[in-house]
Length: 166
Image 1: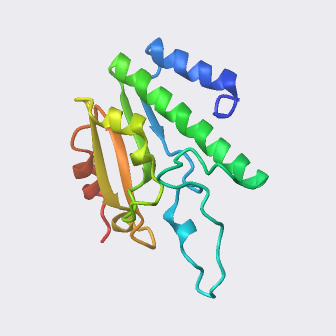
Image 2: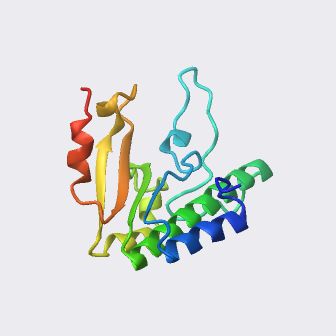
């Protein structure tokens, strides 16, 4: 029950616990399946994989989607919003937070949470910084560029580099 972030009562439980300073840190990795630039590529055999469901101009989801795609986008949005709410509550209480998501893609038209106005506003807070690294350095089979939104976690990149395997 307390791990189901799609349950409103569970979300309220955790947000209240942060406000009451019973929770002082939060780590989140909201689903990236609807944000990934991989949706813009063709598969090796020439077929297309899942089609894009977001664009830089429609970050919360395309105006026209199939029902299955709409459900997928809504779940991703719901979990991202909860992660951002927790992050903001921790800003107010002096806690620590970490939000992980794919690094901004090179194409301007590609979607990314890093293009959301709320995320850009959070990045301007004096206790917030971003940290970009490649998960391949930590043993992942591909580079997988990743960016972290960090609250009151200075020098995180140094800690990550201590665990490099290549």
